[in-house]
Amino acid sequence: MSKLFPHLFEPITLGSTTIRNRIVSSGHDTVLDDHGHIGDDLVAYHEARAKGGAGLIVLQVSGVHETARYTSHVLMATDESSVPGYQAVAEAVHRHGATIFAQLFHPGREVMDGERGMAPRAKAPSDEPQERFKVVPEALSTDEIKDIIAGYGRAAKRIADSGIDGVEIVASHGYLPIQFFNPSVNTRTDEYGGSPENRRRFLAEVAQTVRESVGPDVVVGLRISGEEKTEDGLVATEILNLIEHL
Image (tube, rainbow, N blue to C red; front, side):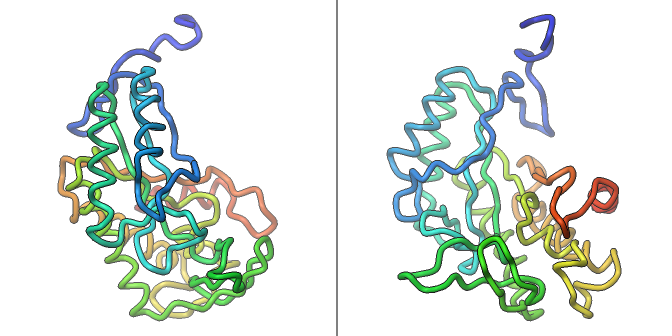
């Protein structure tokens, strides 16, 4: 183990946050939410991993806007009712010396479940159909885009103020931030579409808003796919171009 991974148990510092080792429980769905909130089951799930020695715990995605409900069991960080849950899981993880991050999320057109048996409704950069879940999204208005960007900031601050050590913007797996950058999905002709600079704008504004909302001491990260490996997906050179310009 030590020869294969000589630094695995060494601490690592991100900004002003030091993580005790390089073992990460990465963000993944658990279906352990309590009607969109963090309850006792989810707290216990992550506390067990912190107690077991993980250095960093990353929570499953947290919706940043009312249009971010992609399943019936997604965590939502859109109002103050979510705060006790984030406080509880932060305290439980910290009790065992681990660090905890949350994921900031909007699915865009990647919506799986509709409400009460209805077909899924989704908001996306354009009305390009999503074949996997058979969704035809509604194109976002400029005002809606601005409100979603602000939602990222509000959710990030709410989460950070609850004691979570960092936030991770989810731009992987074809979700909303990367939809804006993909010209096959984003056919807009306004300030958020067309040129690479315009298609980068949404994620750049999200990142700026999140950083301004949480201040300099909270870790802000980005989860992104290195290459999408789909018929209309982005390739590695395009992803690198996006990252280099953020």
